[in-house]
Amino acid sequence: MDASSLAENSLSEDSTSGVSMEQVNVLIQKIEELTTKLDTVININQDLIKTNLMLSGKFGNHNSDSDRDDTGNENRVKNLFYHNNGTNIIIHGNGTFDKRVEIKGIGGIWNKDTKAWEVYSDLNLVKSTFPGIKSKAV
Image (cartoon, rainbow, N blue to C red):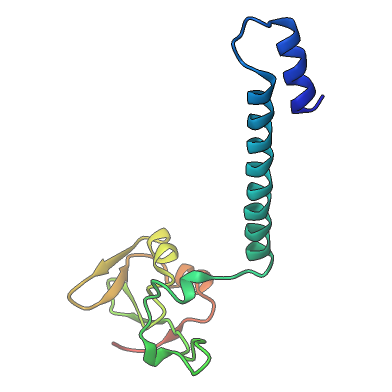
């Protein structure tokens, strides 16, 4: 049952509602206009999702403009390095920001003075969590 036939049935059942058929038709027309506009917005949103636009690449990115080439793509390789200082493992490099959640997950604590992560864990766990990590002293 569509909106207009529903409105006609409810008006015929209760003619004392004080709402004229003309008012109902105007409301139906407005609802149909809103539905059309909403469908347009939904289609645009689906198109954005399908094309996988990542606005965060242009807005709010933590990298400076010097880290991007002429097309706006990041051209800097991000690396993780470790150093075993005898009591803990130090993780450093320009890739630590992107991996901070994983580093915290293996017990990493950020040291703001050294600008590196301290991990009180087994080196094998660090290497298995970050397969591409390389040994390099701070």
